[in-house]
Amino acid sequence: DAKTTQPPSMDCAEGRAANLPCNHSTISGNEYVYWYRQIHSQGPQYIIHGLKNNETNEMASLIITEDRKSSTLILPHATLRDTAVYYCIVRVRDTGNQFYFGTGTSLTVIP
Amino acid sequence: DSGVTQTPKHLITATGQRVTLRCSPRSGDLSVYWYQQSLDQGLQFLIQYYNGEERAKGNILERFSAQQFPDLHSELNLSSLELGDSALYFCASSSQQGGNTEAFFGQGTRLTVV
Image (cartoon, rainbow over all chains, first blue to last red; front, top):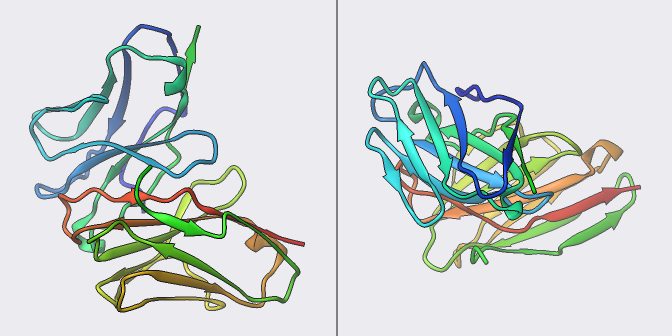
């Protein structure tokens, strides 16, 4: 169901930018890219989403390539509290725009 | 706080029993989604309701059912429980069904079947 590919794990030094990549080569023109994160067993937390333009909010920035086949979530100054599993999701229009979660990237922020 | 409320937070029950999980969406949200997350597993989409009507089904077992009431809260009913049904169950809500609308998740109900 998931249309995305993410590295299983990444480390990032505290205070540095964390860049989390995601491949979604089969994305269609009207399908949005979403990012969520899950800390321990808490409910997934919405981070950001976009269609084709780069997006920024108080939590992160989302960079989508021009061909829309990949994207990068940027946490500008990672803190220990950003340690979590990050999910990149493409809402597939043909399946009712459901949020299908893949395996995500486990990000560890190192002091 | 996402604004989505799930009750109970924890539930322990025996095999063969039936339980009901409740979800109150964010104020004004019409769409409710249910997910299951087993130990060390990803989130599996179960079912979605929009304004009282079922909109999509995922990997939901026949022993499981759900509904959304006129006040928009939703309940997930799990029957003939098995040990393998032990999991976290999450509810999410969004204002619309469209692709440009984020969903917000509750903190989940942890179900333990013994």
